[in-house]
Image (cartoon, rainbow, N blue to C red; front, side, top):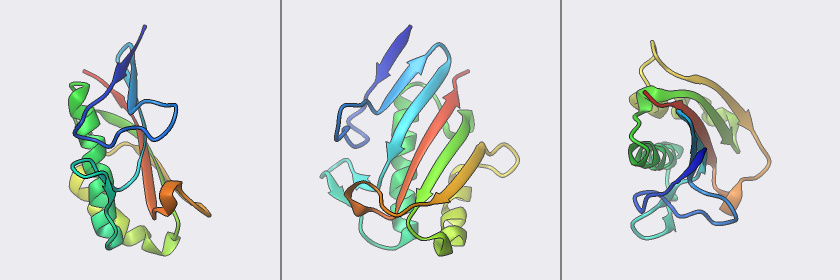
Length: 127
């Protein structure tokens, strides 16, 4: 059985999808971009600021599902500029402990929704 997860603490979906879907104990979180849910505006600053906002959005969805960053087993990271890899990693490491960090790929892409610089989706295994 699937359950839709939604929170006002993360940006609303901007298409025919949900913030997350819980199936059994597995949580599938849609790609998050750097939108501030408080005002619906894009966070347009450094890649570090954008990455923090994306990971805060993921955290809000995890919380709404009763999960935490430590429950994430897989992340997919999409970026417009691979040269920002190190800066993204620095921020990412603030949310995920190196010893228990999820599996991950980071892929450079031509464009992302609303022409942002980063998008991250995740899969979590709930306790």
